[in-house]
Image (tube, rainbow, N blue to C red; front, side, top):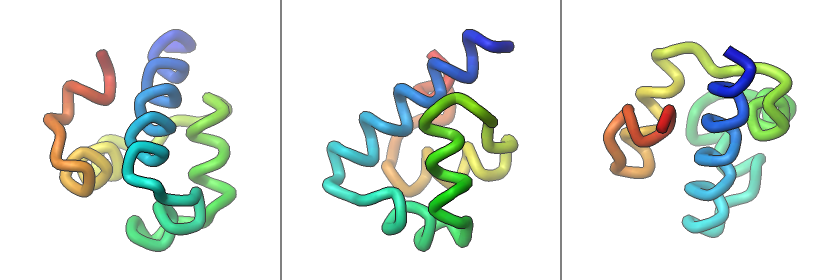
Length: 68
């Protein structure tokens, strides 16, 4: 599971930066705190599946993109 945290973290960072969003911008769009987004991006925690789906929808990528 640890490896999956790092994969998800890397992909969220890449998508967010590619869209020129700050962590606060992404957090606002997802109704989460910027601290939660920061933890996801540092692989300290992992968003649940509903949040992962929201991230995938926001960036218009398939859900499996985030975990591969």
